[in-house]
Image 1 (cartoon, rainbow, N blue to C red):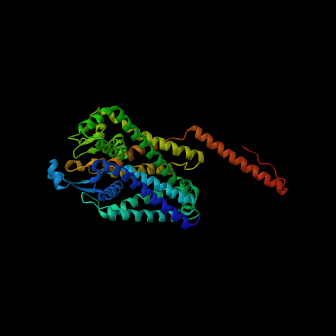
Image 2: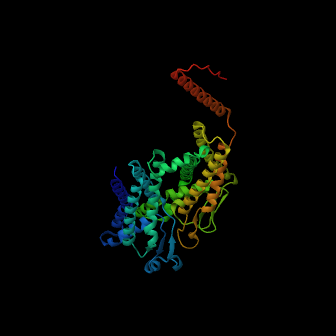
Image 3: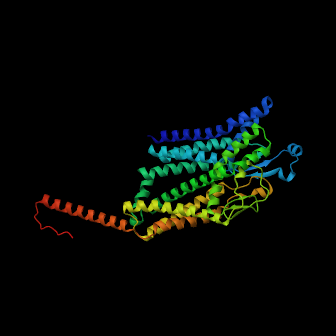
Length: 437
């Protein structure tokens, strides 16, 4: 497929991704606007509200300023009328990222991944800039640079990940193939980059599944607390719907919190608070229903959950080791040590990025500190995964592996000997047979 065609199709993909993301926000907001305000609705504020929420969903912090008349009518403290809201609802960000990965993979499969990445990024950047210019509001302001650049950064990261991943496995006849050829010339060290990335992908998926399972368990165990908080809010059907939709948008964020709890460092729900396996220390918590899932003060024995990341690292090490044994590569300890360290470092980096995205401010005052600490979570995940991966990758080679290796060497030797004898017969030479040990 021609590069121009690939670029145009990638640009169309980007336009669809942005349009779907905006429509997901605009459609329910339109319905809620109609129900709440009726014929007196200020329809001119609908698009700026949707655009601002779209930017917020991609990591741009909002400066909230409650109007003075609302402050006087509701009795809100003047100090609480202005605050930063920066805890990102990761559902929209993940949708954009996964859509971009799919678009990048399609561009790579078409044979022009670089053109596709450029076309998709330019198209998404144009839409993001248009939203940043037209969606300004007074009650919730987003810095122009953040609203224009952060959505593009998310989409570009997905494009590159999908395109390079497909080009690495299938070939692109260009830059990626040249890099791969250079890496293949490293001999016993050639599998190190690919296997470190593969092990990291296993760790990330397994930890995500563990966090989601933990969140599901807490929903079953403490669902009554969530219902009680819903009832205490005294909201009507419209308010309950808004709260529910908002909490659904934060489900991926809560999964990151669950992973932080499982890994040990835990997370905060306000300054001076801590929610971890060692115990829960909370002050006054906002009456948000989903916060009813926070675990109560538990036994010190809950720290046993830190074995989960170690087991995840061991599973990733087993997956990598099985492939290395099957392919007969990276037999020395040096490459395997580097692979284990690479898995740990990359997993720590992903954990730190997830913690940055899943932490921030949810209100004024002490609520400005919410979520896991990136440094603590990265250190915990890195060390725990390193222990698990090293156990499997650096353990002494099993006798079955050694027997399989001896069998492979014997088969290679016999195949080479057979080929040599066949060449001698075809050349008409009559040489004595070489005894085989």
